[in-house]
Image (cartoon, rainbow, N blue to C red):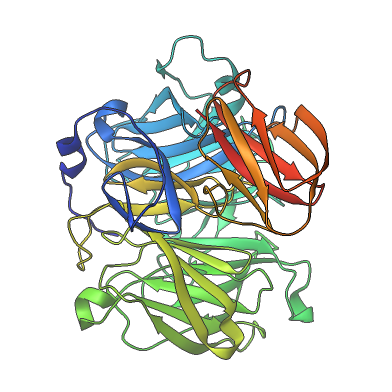
Length: 468
């Protein structure tokens, strides 16, 4: 919604901040619990004064991962395939004027970008162009443009159907503006939904949840300022409101995400911490019956910062929490109304107060486990500490040191070591050694290039190794 522009990130200078483990609750000056810093780019390094949203793209050709980061003056593209040596590839400039609001989503190897800048419309960018950037950083040009609306707060894409939903535009009463993007370079208008007013953010899926009445239908969950609306958008010419979700102490219904079993919708209210003075609040609605969803319970975090965007991956909820950074919440026992914070990485060490500084978004969907954090403090890349910490036994095996440069050791506290395989992040085999059932083996890796590798011991225990 609203936020206050700051030059906080510029105070750190423009030196690239690289990999640092979370030790004693800190990683290179950032408070942390269970998540290591891999890399950081400040706004000045991307020639920007402010940052906002983010998304990600994995190249299907080679598995390389890229971060797409919204800036006030454009969209930054960052190669994170070597997560401790990221490369800022360049920027797609804003279509019109700068704005602190920008949002990006991906479909079929194309990025779709909207902004609240006047007459910005929707930019389309071919992400495969990132495969061959000769002299980064480059200034890119858009490959197509859609002008069916001027400004938009956000864009949602259902990759299963090839439809985009621009929300918060000047069309359809601020509700969803449907766009057929099945041919990405020729986006075409496909109607809209205006019956429930302004939508700030949404999630759209082909429904595969417990309510058999809607199986296979395209369902829209819209965060509409003071409620959540559930809409059947299968027929673009005749979208139908199914139901609404309401809850108490409403400040601003900002964003939400479904659990993977589709039983619950986790809601973030952006202004309740300010309006009512309580700690970070997460609202959970039961949506097992789409016709009769209901408020289920609320969870309060241990800090007072304002929540922004949150996403579910498995049994974890990754929450962008403005001054509190990224908070990771265990939702494995959500059916018993039990949520618990299990980790965090705080990109704003100054405080955890209820303000609009710092973290706008997290992107936790990369298969590698890389997590992008974006916002006022620029671009931050983190990872789960359990995926490569020295002397941390996983399945009975520990790798140390990690990161390593000349060699590393594998130590067993249970089963003897019979085989060690090392693959790069593209899945290519770089080492395959058999051993005579020892408890400790040291492996020379001086021939390996800098990057992240997967080490598999005895064919069933895999950990991540960082080679410096």
